[in-house]
Image 1: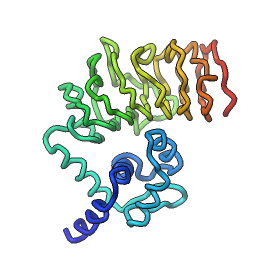
Image 2: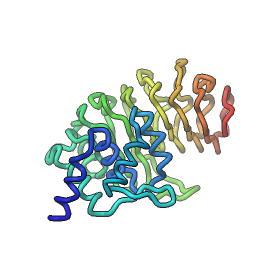
Image 3: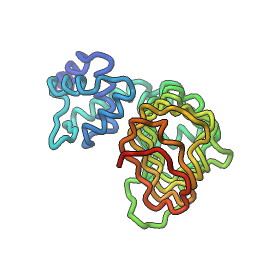
Image 4: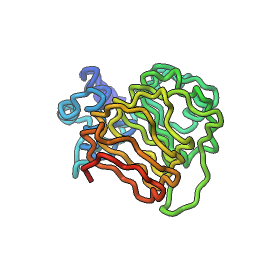
Length: 262
């Protein structure tokens, strides 16, 4: 308890932005590449490099080989801070990573505007049936990752997420969208994509991402690998800062314009 008290003093001394960066690392990005996190959070309007420096000075994180690391006790403190936002109702917390909490949230459709980040390991849940308005009340959602931690290349797998009535809404605040085996033909037409920094939708069912022209000055990375139904992607001259696009296995792609990166 004495250790936790001392650690909490360091956390309480952070400003609001530094607290958000700390919680993002504790809940989602521990052991991940610092530069990748910096790119994503800078897209959220954060001064991420400065925030990370403060966290290092406060002994809340360390960086080894450019990876963000923290002690297990510090991570547990971060988890508890998020749980304290609402002990009984996950839909009123800012960050969600526990598979059962997320499964129940979608099953009962209890998401609120408090939710800013969802990381769901699909390897740890059974089939997930989402209503078309599953994300409608999550207006502040900025990080969304539906992924499989146990996935072998070339492995035949069933779809875990079902959207039988389509999807009406994704937050305009989304900076990071990673959706393994996204089940629909395209992203929602009402989804404003101008804030996207990274889009990872490998092994998905999309035929196209969107039809409307939209300037995507924040977009840095796209991964659409093994999208076997994909026939076209948007004009990438409207994404002047795009650095990397991955299209391995997109055998039906016929339209591809405007990209000069790697």
